[in-house]
Length: 340
Ligand code: OGA
Ligand code: NI
Image (tube, rainbow, N blue to C red; front, side, top):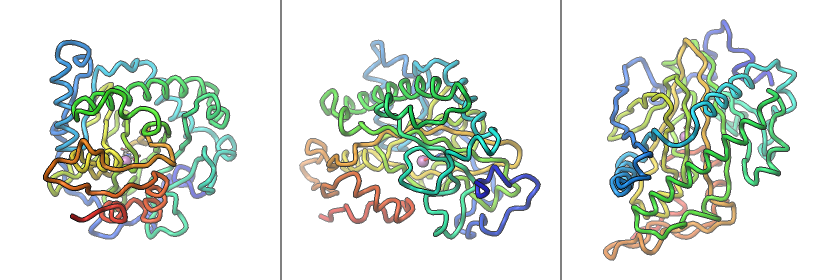
């Protein structure tokens, strides 16, 4: 528990163990926070503009691997309640969080700090994290935090809505790619994981990171970044900031969707920077294939002049390799690549 950044950070200078090597530091230069990440109005997907929206999502997933969605159908008050419950969770007295804190990677519901590799990593991340599975809900809910008292009720409703939104986006993507309806249903999107990041105010944001450069290992991520800036995406050789938009979700393509699409869709590298003023709490809803699901490029997405870029593998093999490489985006696809 005493390792949690939130339990010791106040009035301290940044400890040496949180200082990244110069090439990985965010530094002091101003990162453009522009509107280059596409914003998609999902209400239009219900009407005659559906084709336009499908194309917008497809283009964003090919060029950026990232986009934001507005008018997404998740009630605003539910999102507000959910973000408040998570903030309240991190503000609970230590004794209320102690039962959930765990350094055991096998614990499905746990509060921990930095990465899953605290004892072996070179530098620690300036973040605490709470994560737990959300499917099947009736079983999972029993291991979720019981405090704050509204946690289970609100987060259950949120996870249902986030799943609905995720599946809707996957359906639009599968339409855009020319795959059948329901392509991403069942095993490909069966495992749902909620990951709540908490980044306390940091004494020197130029030297450290909340989350270091990575691509998400899953199929698709639905992120709510609250109203505090911190997310950056690597595009064309530079970092660009993702402006928090009111009542929007950030959606990004994970490694598995890049693989299934034979590299037609892109899982973009991203990271989270810290700030010295306020705590930032974000919630990532990860849509994952089930552990034993076999992943490979779909035949219909391999063009006639192409060969498959990846060999078939089980999702759990990917995860094992991903965590041993701590998400290193240059290396984690390598064992699964085929070279023509
Ligand atoms: C993640 C992630 C970014 C953020 O949890 O995988 O990239 O802004 N989070 O918290
Ligand atoms: Ni991520």
